[in-house]
Length: 169
View (spheres, rainbow, N blue to C red):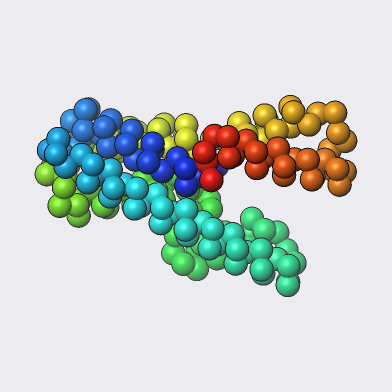
């Protein structure tokens, strides 16, 4: 599961509107945009942290070898975050924290469990785009033998084109 920078505004807007509409958060209509920016800041920080962990994990993997997933998970645990094993849970924890500290949220009416149940499907829907893109790319290049050099090159080209078309990056 991955969150793309191009999705941040849409995700933040939907979360802010949904939480306000369902009376989980009391937000003055004039402050809705500010709450959306608070949410965007959490999402952008998650993307930055995930990229940093990916980069460091790739560096370690290239120099020492080992499983990328294990290396990234170890790095995340050292930082005291769970962005690898439970990225949605991590994001939701950060969002709940920011709701209690935001000057633009007047009151939090829902308990943590209710907030999680409301936010999780929204985040899952946006973060599952990677799997959908992968399926679409594989469908477009099914005439090539998977694993071949030609397949790898074409996969990257088609994936890049789809991301640009869908304004993900």
